[in-house]
Length: 296
Image (cartoon, rainbow, N blue to C red; front, top):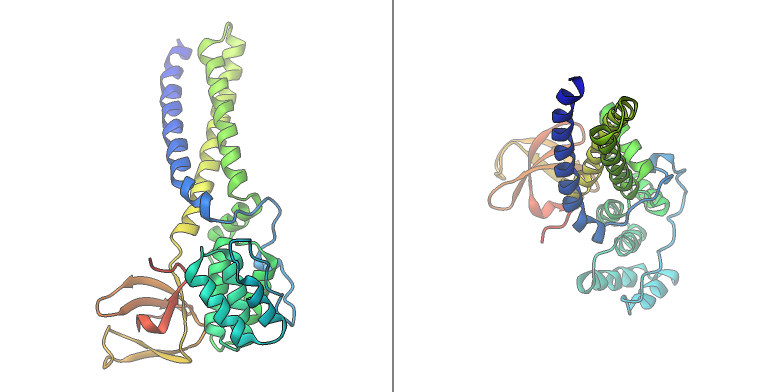
């Protein structure tokens, strides 16, 4: 009699898992085409030891036909020309982590630290665990006045560490693997020839259901951080954080080039509602900041 009552909720859990797995795969399919995914064991930025000189530009793929001239300019110390060459590449080619990284490194050499941080943040978004990107971003931040970043909550920090260590591909693979084991164990429970087989199937199915949902949730968290990035960087030497989207409104604080912000919403007439790294909420002109996720 107990087995009869247990089968109905297990079937319901099975259908719920299928829906969750389907939605996770559909949501992540497009991101897998554009994001450079980390493999297990990659280090975080905080694990890297900053160097005193920026790492060299990365070699781009064959589609960037004029990259050789940009790299040659950089190697020769002609950083202004290298910047112009990489900017032209950015206008006419797909935006990759390597291209953002190279442009950010060239900006660093021309002491345009706001633009350097912006490009390196974009590179980090596409390839979060590259050591060269982390090193150069750390160097660029050391050159600015408002270098303080908000300390993440422990829960967010722990989730970032776990998802970063495993990587999105591994999380998806483990989610699918545990889902398959759940299906097999459910069949043992539903169709078992004796009580022992049904009992083993029941406990294994419940365990695999838990892990499958866990891995799917971690995959969703990893993908959401990539998709919903609302960070911004101050590009002007000094800007005034206003209480309202009006030049004549009260100034809350002065922010400097390279300061990292969180975009709360886009206002009318070219204003952004932002939150500074020290928790101040206010308004800035859109031309004064660059978004880590470029607007289409």
